[in-house]
Image 1 (cartoon, rainbow, N blue to C red):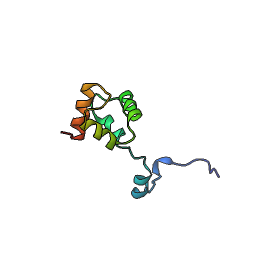
Image 2: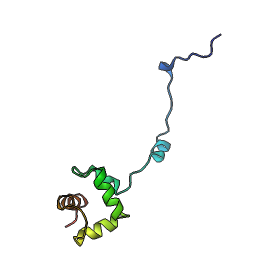
Image 3: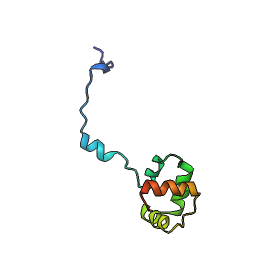
Image 4: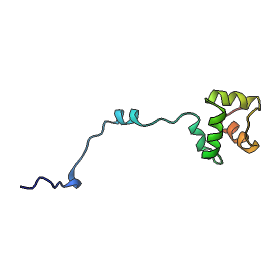
Length: 83
């Protein structure tokens, strides 16, 4: 009697969708800025160094005091719907 072999093609697993959805890692608001075309990982690192939260970033965007390139600032304002 051989117990070491399984036919893996016929095995079905039940997945509880509620538990898998809560276990997945959620993006922070600052990480969602990667969705903007033209903002990459390096730019996101610069933003994270300067700002701890998205609310601080929005505040400085409104006051035009963001230490980033002008094209990046325009894209951030458009994405965050400021002005």
